[in-house]
Image (cartoon, rainbow, N blue to C red; front, side):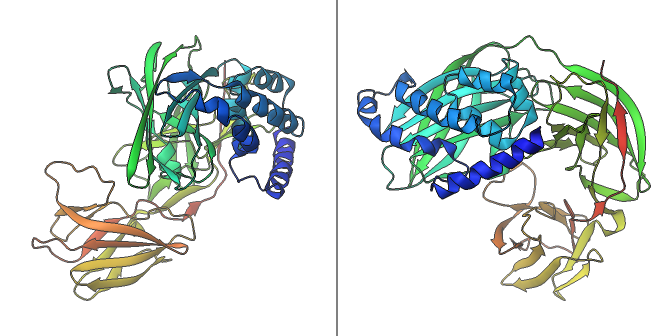
Length: 458
């Protein structure tokens, strides 16, 4: 069913493109409604929380009726979104094709909020939230009356009252890196995840967003009351070992929550390869339905890479006891090739993987730079630190680096050049010994042997 739905969504996307509606912004389809609603909006220009105006719901309903009738979704899902305030946000779920979120809406796990705050001609609306003990998905919209300068999302946060930040990892910027808002109406979702079972819990929370326009940042804070659901985690302990191209990996357990599943893996430290990612991991049932690691999934691992905790879409609401964990392709490389060596005197790579994608090494004006051919994937291949031959470690400091006391830093920068990445950094001011070693943090080398683990869900 989802494959057919995906095809019709693509067809609908082509029709939307022909109508000159901005991509990835279905909300813009109600732009005409926004213009008609301006007079009503002007009457509400006060710096306080207001309920979402009725014109938005009316035009969103028109949009959804036409959209939902043109794609393949379950009757339950169609019925749920037709009764939800701020329902235009649910359209994005259809585009994302996230089975977990769609099921969460069907099971009344979505909490509509529709609270707004207006400042300087900019209205921010907190549409709704879906949350469980592993994280939260927050839906929001931004409407701007003046479009002379694009807005940039400077930050997103979720806090408890008293400005205490929840111990969660914001994966939104990890995926999109400060999206720029060029349209009058913009809708998106903020995803937060944790590996430590920090339950959001009942009570009063505060969601905040910073919007940058020119050199000024406008700060919005919207408090809301979150109602925790009664759903509990399903934990399946497995401790099953698989051997994939000679590499031993133990599937310790799978934890199913309403919006995310967590897979706990243990990698044998005696393996010959260094594993960088399990990004193709997926859960599959006996009729071929799949739950994948999508762009909102997160992988936590310990320093030596032997323990992994990977979040992905969840089959929590699916009545199936015949699940399999499919590893797919695994990014890995021989440990003997898992680093590069740079000699700053001879200006040469002394060591790099046999099928190297490192090039254009330059040492000039006390700076080192080189290119990484990532073929448009824009994954950083090397770690953010290097060691000299004597064991001294230096960290490369970028604009976003959180400095740690006691560490040695050198200034650096990263630049995207076509389908490649250019890394540049200053040489240490203190004495150092050549060569300099960068460990690989990722490399497009794959283990592709098929491996599956059966999971019995009770």
